[in-house]
Amino acid sequence: MVELHPIPVLNPPRRASVRLATWLSVIPGLGQLYNRQPRKAAIFLLGVVSLFFVTLNIPGATAELLALWRPRGSAMVMLSLLIQILSLLLFMTTFFLALTAWYDAMHDARRTAQEINGERAPGGRWWLFHR
View 1 (tube, rainbow, N blue to C red):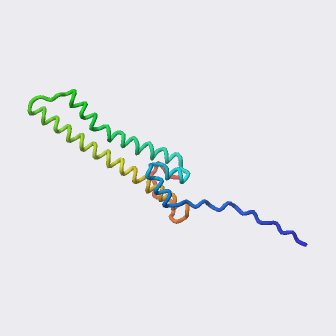
View 2: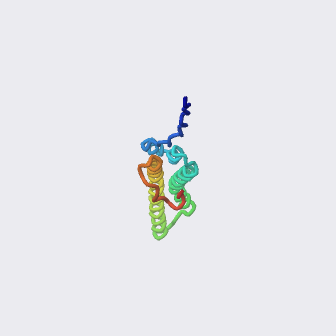
View 3: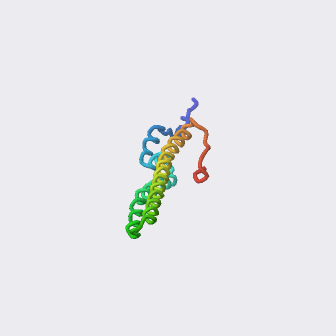
């Protein structure tokens, strides 16, 4: 009688939930942690939080600058108005940059989950995160 040995079953490749990875990235970096990319998660979290931190401190820094300055005369008032306009432009730029980085964290988590599942070919990544 021939004795049959069971064939060992290898662990099937892990399937990642694309929706879960995307929704976890509402908090920047959690989707990357779900996809088992801790370095990328830390970069996204620190990048988005620091950009929002800088953005929210721009109006206060401008107010402090103008409080120390106390412009007098019409030319100085026009100069302070110009500084406030530049401050607003800087605020809007950093705010939209933070939103873009936040969106990119969500998009990256989604693409990586699709790559893990074999639904998308790897590629099209930043130079910083290539595998």
